[in-house]
Amino acid sequence: ETGVTQTPRHLVMGMTNKKSLKCEQHLGHNAMYWYKQSAKKPLELMFVYNFKEQTENNSVPSRFSPECPNSSHLFLHLHTLQPEDSALYLCASRSGYSPLHFGNGTRLTVT
Amino acid sequence: DQQVKQNSPSLSVQEGRISILNCDYTNSMFDYFLWYKKYPAEGPTFLISISSIKDKNEDGRFTVFLNKSAKHLSLHIVPSQPGDSAVYFCAARVNDYKLSFGAGTTVTVRA
Image 1 (cartoon, helix red, strand yellow):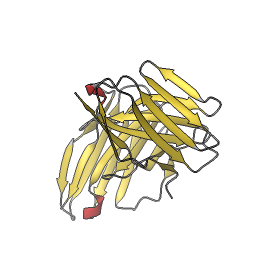
Image 2 (cartoon, rainbow over the protein chains, first blue to last red):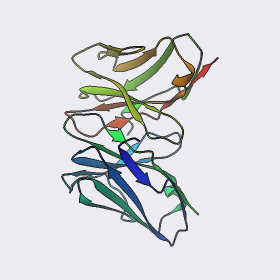
Image 3 (tube, chains in turn orange, purple):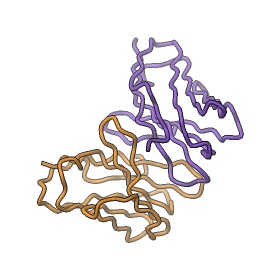
């Protein structure tokens, strides 16, 4: 149990599909993050939410749409994705100056 | 613009020997550095960190060294154990702002 739970663990979707990734943290943290990890590349920050407010959008294409209904839940809505969007999507949370606490990720494949 | 670089994508070391992982950075404003460890099918987990006011931090078998003049960070694992086989990410930040990650080094500890 990592304290940060991501579902689904694996997702295969076509380019015309709409799907959502879910993240839930049980650590009482007030900030939540979406990262993208492509093979052999650094983790790329996508979005940051502090106390449910989006504080960072790292030039992410609009086909990725985040939602943070409360401090414990974070979603990433996906639509009309491209094959190059296939990657591991990681959710993380933290409070204050603590290190990021990551979930196990969703392995996304776009066909 | 990749500000944190891990130039060795992989490292193989014999059990019981020392593993040395290297990380170089370009942003002289970075004031905090972290190492994360990632097993397959799991998210990264925090391993050890160091503030820019220090040049060494030790935690059990893990020691991080910081050379600010060279903009170089290293992680030493001694003795290396089979359970240390994983991908190790170096990360850095400025004033608690977003983390910049390296691409990772895959460590394989041979029995």
